[in-house]
Length: 243
Image 1 (cartoon, rainbow, N blue to C red):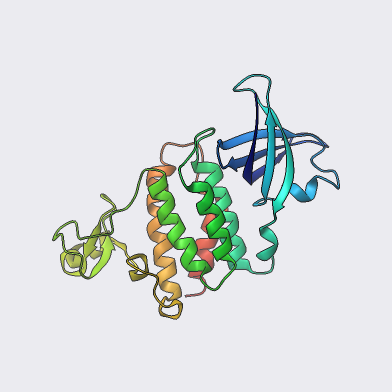
Image 2 (cartoon, rainbow, N blue to C red):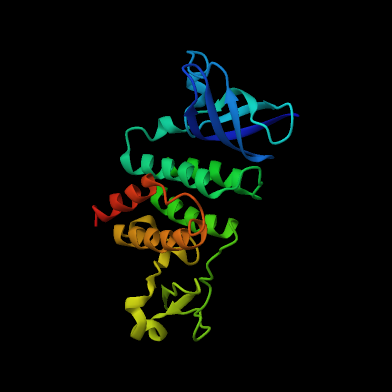
């Protein structure tokens, strides 16, 4: 079995003094593990930094057996975020979430291009907005999209400020007022077109992450062996500490 593809490196696991297993999300084959021989050599090590987009040659004797990767660097993304703590946390959170919620060998339509798109926007003033929207989109790609289009009670699309933790559907201010302590906040920037960046507060971003992580825990980690990655929790704290 042999194929060629482009891929994004999600995780690197050392398995000997010289070799490592890479976990990548590839454009046409989904998430795949592969052994890289001589991974820590001066020639190969810079190619296999987390988040790098690489050209991958994969071969295995039989389907289902751990195969071998040969990789060539296309683009290194992490270097743009190394000196910016919030952006770096968001960047690593994308990789850790993908590593733990995607299924090995399963292809998710549009996910590869979405990853590259969010990497581009993370290197801009819109990074927090882009990351928060990406988590909502990730839930949709995994089959657990939230319905933020209208109130679950009144069916109105006006004044939506809450989300029901049971249904994942929006709730208007009037309908949710009596139950607001049990509802999740719905930041206005998650609705409609992109608002001016300076109109979105740190509290709004924190509320968005609170909303999305609730459903990420509920739907994507409830029955899995992984917990929400530590880097994602630290990103949440990063915003909390700046409110």
